[in-house]
Image (tube, rainbow, N blue to C red; front, side):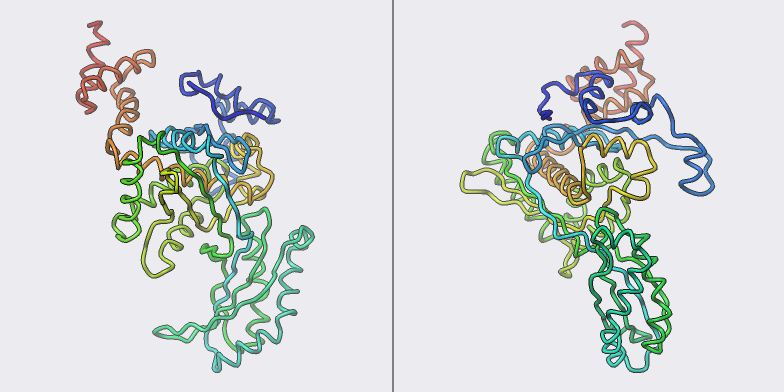
Length: 422
């Protein structure tokens, strides 16, 4: 088994890193070419993915190292434009490695399809009628996706909710659908649309919306890990991390930025694997508010040994079949690099990354401050902006860091001095 503990990984060339993380993963020559950016996405493929295509934007894909998840060493592909994200996740994962890494679990692969019914004269009686026709409704839905049903998925249950609003008393039917290894939006939406006429006949009302819910509260992923106090900087740092977490748990203004840090890691892996970043983000933030108070998606405690015990729980509607996961060559390559065999396994890896990202962010905030490490890495971008040659970037950044002056105007001065041969 390949280890993800690779000292000096960041010092290797891009080709050397690519060789390490793709060895034995079964990537095709095309996938390797797209992943290494030696080949761009064909415009006809891009044009088939969305409308009105005029071009493409490339996002760097980095590899987070040191991740051991459920006993398996896993390289984590992360697509992000933000400096320090990949390095921070890797460093936090390193602090868990000797404690067994990350352990994950999943509540299932259930998604909800919502059918909104208006103009129902007797909503409570209509609710009862829906349950009387439950099997008939479920059978009609499952006829729309026999492949999903053959894989053990499909509609498994119904819920009926009565929602009073300003202008209506709505009847809302929830299709409880097991989407297996797919995210499931297309399957769930098709089922909801197909059964709408039957719902109108049963209730005497008018169906309006028929759409999946991204608050996937029956598709929760959980991850936990123990972060070494010594690796984090000592037991006082651990205490401060817990205090920083408690700030986010009780203050929504802090929680918004705290959870954004979690999503730095989560969204990067979701994007790299061709999944829907907006759906995952919407579900996560809705779940953070489900108690009526917006709070942290993570929990941090001090265990009996004085180490940092962290956990995370959130909805994770991702898949490994359908959509860009099967059409975008970089997404396919990312899944192969991870060695993913199920949507549940992918969800666990994503949650572990979010937990690591959060631990790293809290450690930085509780010790040297968020800007020190972030700006040191951002200085490389500033050097590029200043027109530095690639061979000069490390020298420029080293001088700026030594001077403790990472402003763009100073980096520009250093760059111009080097270009003049000074």
